[in-house]
Amino acid sequence: MPVTHAGCSPKLFVIDTNVILHDAGCLRNFEENDVAVPITVLEELDRFKKGNDDINFQARAFLRRVDELTGDVLSPEGASLGDGLGSIRVILEAENNQRLKDAFLVDCPDHRILNVALTLQQHESPRPVVLVSKDTNLRMKAKSLGLTAQDYSTDKVESFDKLYTGKRLVGGLSSDSVGQFFNNGGHVPLDELDCVEKPIANENFILRNGSKSVLATYNANERSFVRIDRLTASGISPRNAEQSFALRALMDDQLKLVSLTGKAGSGKTLLALAAAMECRSRYRQILLARPAVPLSNRDLGFLPGDIDAKLDPYMQPLYDNLAVMKHPVGEANGYQRGPELLAAHHVEVTPLAYIRGRSLQRVFFIVDEAQNLTPHEIKTIITRAGEGTKIVFTGDIHQIDHPYLDSLSNGLSYLINRMVGQPLYGHVSLEKGERSELAELASNLL
Image (tube, rainbow, N blue to C red):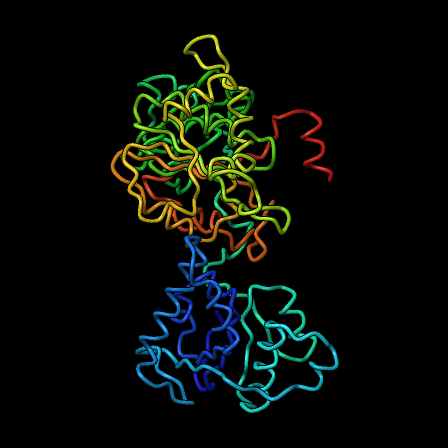
């Protein structure tokens, strides 16, 4: 959020409902500035109190926090948010702004919140009043009426260009340097490879000397580079260097958290499933999940059947990937074995809405389409991990269906930005599509 400079009066931030549903702890992120909550926001939160989804939890947590802060009675001046922070107040009434009324004839919660912000701007002048919303359209309406409006950016990644990719190409190695990777078990100490600057734990490298090259990853505990050999999992072989990096991370038991990003057809989900099936003897169970974000206004409740039947359309892409896997056990392919594995509870599809409160022991947990998760949802999932559990997030941060997330504010980008360099974490960004020539062409041009 914006920082107040010395000598300037604190700003007054008017927060929209979607900010609270995104982060119930948002009140502590406005520094010494004050926060105003329109009564319309509290009315909207009341509709979200009941339920098991993350937004329901956020609504309940925020209302409890405000109740604790305000005590028995909330004065017009508001209540303190804590040491070094501003105050919070609830705005009950606001004058009807004629410009707003003339521009937007329809009365709705967004316009009431906007009306409160415009009234405060008039009464608090010259103090800066800022509307904070994750709704792009509401921000545009506010700006058109001369009101400063900003996105809630506390958990947003600074820049897409600076987002960690998990891989690096290094050229100009000597023949001796490349040759070292084929001696001593493929381990080369960091101080013997001066051409690589500041390697990060579990970062992957394509090291080249003219026409010769070697794939390696950096082991921070040993302070050495380790050669990556060609791997195969459940009949699936990597088709490029990035997929080799990804499969190594997926099959490395030392890495408890792995994220894979890439466009459609780059192999994210297929590699994750292949690795899980290959390593299944080391885990009690394989769990599969995807955020149930529909492309229309019909959610799970509109679909017929029990919870398994309702989830089936969302999980079909996972089944499609099982279908192309030729598992080494038996002659049946993944499509035939999939139902058998589900029935035997070796592979289970789980709804993310019910993940809170669970403790996952010795589980290989794959969360597909993770770009549609919020940072708080990502945290909730990871904190369910018990002993021996590995969690894999896959997704395309350029293909987001969630209405209030983008490529910088989604949970997957947040995870990559915060976890980079941790010894238990590995990440690979897959850039080359391998599904088909047609899929690759469409991904690049359309």
